[in-house]
Image (cartoon, rainbow over all chains, first blue to last red):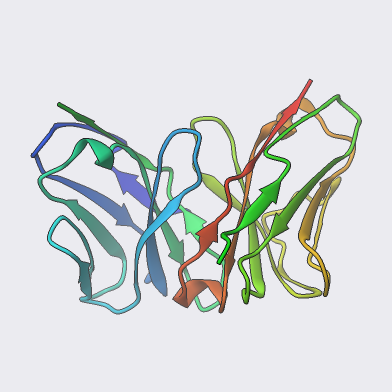
Length: 110
Length: 115
């Protein structure tokens, strides 16, 4: 069951903030966040396992709600290097199978 | 420690030919995952393998596609009798432990073009 990401696309100016959401209709086992630049491999950002968890640093962080059905990625004071497509990958149960959302394209302009 | 390696990086095949994609996981990683990505789309899970075992192949088409991860050597994704719709980027990822609780490290991908 594919998670739903929103928004589909975001355009920012340098220094602005963005939030990307990832939602599932059922409780999740874990959520992974990746960033992919055009023509390159996805790069791991972080993994969340526990309901109510928040992790990351001040610039890029993520949360996992108590019901474990929604995760949000927070990008603060965006930089040009943040541009790319962000994917959440979710695991519905303890199976080892990761299903990715459709992606959110972020473009940061000078 | 070298990262996940995939070869070839680009592969061109004519319709009906076979494509073999190779993936060498990071040293010490015994879990390998294959994904397919169509242009401007997300990553679609294909198969999850451990050494000599297929753990989950629910994302793999029933016909023409097969995968293996032998005791020695790289993991191989094999596509027989390729069709134009097989054109995509194929990524493999590896992890030291089971996927859900661990970071996956992605390889650079193989871009398959079927003419």
